[in-house]
Picture 1 (cartoon, rainbow, N blue to C red):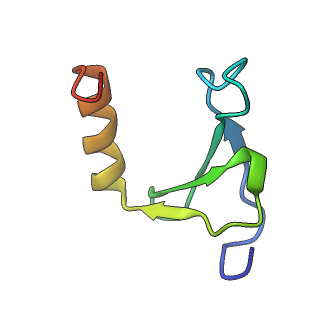
Picture 2: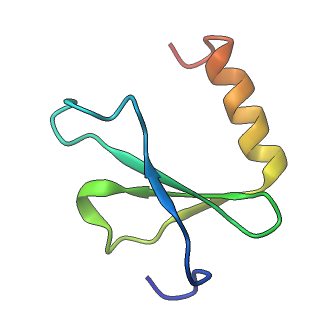
Length: 67
């Protein structure tokens, strides 16, 4: 993937295991943002979220907003 910072440490979501290939990976970006990519097609561009956007997403997920 071009344009991404070098040496990103990608982590697979703990909720991705056993979901018929529906997996995502997350990497912390410099400055606290996050990159999100599709595990089964790493050739696709990663999505970038600022630290504030990622924090809002996590708060919403924990509050059940996406259930």
